[in-house]
Length: 112
Image (cartoon, rainbow, N blue to C red):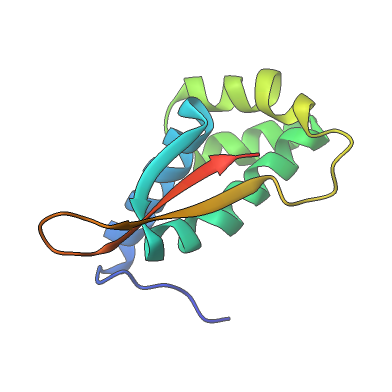
């Protein structure tokens, strides 16, 4: 499976993605580069799927990945119940144009 490297070593990339997914769950939407948004999407979808399961094992798996207690609580109590009748496609990526300064393509990634 091809992965997005994002110009970082494995540990830095994992930390970045964990922080971004946690922020997405807490805030509902974040603005980031297009490449990071595409890397975050499958991870966020997987976390919401774990939240929909709602078991203790799923909560522990999510807690192992997410940063802090607040994202885990919000995922299981607020975010996942909204998607009980939905079979995927929990995250939307909207392109917003280039960033001022380095013209990197920017996107907003949000929970549907």
